[in-house]
Length: 307
Image 1 (cartoon, one colour):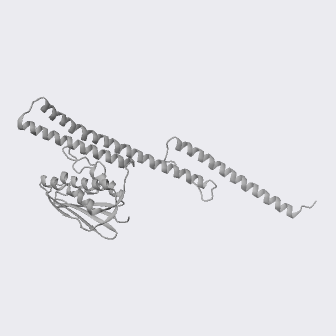
Image 2 (cartoon, rainbow, N blue to C red):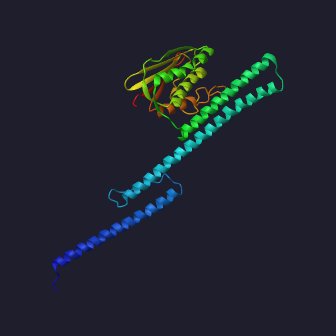
Image 3 (cartoon, rainbow, N blue to C red):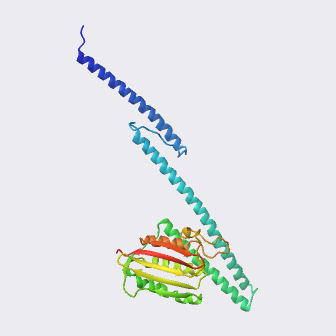
């Protein structure tokens, strides 16, 4: 009985295909078992679990996808923990920044109300109470502003306005404040019109926070405000001749709740400059600080002109 060579070849090929598919199926079953084990491991909280795979494995894309999900989940978990720690620090700082001046305010007012003090001493107590109340008002305003920015709930209303005119209006309100604080000042704002898209309230807050920062922290006696412009952008600089900022603190001054003076007697709440940076960013701009200790501090804002 003779065997057809063609049928024999076809049989051998079919056998090889079956063996190949069986091997592949066995390999895939093994990989699926590993995938199932890895998913259970990740589900139980082990986000460090990674899957190794070969270039020709049929489950390669699935393994890469699982690894990516695990890495993204791990990154989000780290950010969440960092955020929780930041908010705990925030709450601790807020607790101190509110409770301490509030307790002091109540104490001064009780002394006045109970007639423990009289005459000039009473007037002094009322003045101190007024300053404490003003501090609390400023702190609450900054806190609400920061919360809205941090949560993305801040609504901006950009309009095409003359930057120079808006700046003059804001700076004009500071002249009497600077004079009463024994600060000399120099303002250099171009008389020409410079139109750009700005949110008036946000831009005013930027300048107000920067000037308040100078009065509160610089320990200087002169401030220079200058605007220069070209076809691409406006450059806004604020210079003071105060004690400056040390190189160790300078990279961190725009971080929320960061205070260069960590003592409990330090003024400010560490929110003003972080708000400034967020508002400048909302205008598609940048802000940098440069400082020479015991000489000067320079804040420079660059805002694009593009309408």
